[in-house]
Length: 105
Ligand SMILES: [Zn+2]
Image: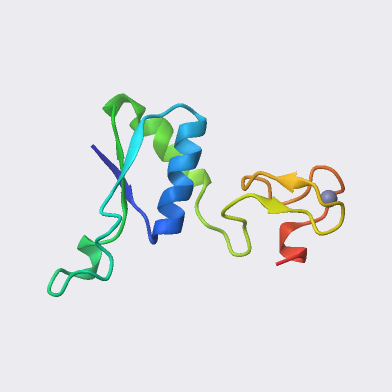
């Protein structure tokens, strides 16, 4: 069943990574649709994240709601510009030295 349509492929992939981290089975649909159609309305194209199990829906929605892109937030692993620690995308500040991701982007 469909979980949600992502605004772009990068975010769809990001959601899937997050869902896999919490062991929710999911797959990416429509990844090649964007830019390949003529008359299809824009809101009917774009990458979609689908769940394998309907029971996972509430948890999955929480995951991607929490993962809504915020300005300046990392979408993938990043490296702290101060101490060079490698950080997961869910962290917007370096746990090692407290520097903020937005300080380096
Ligand atoms: Zn740091």
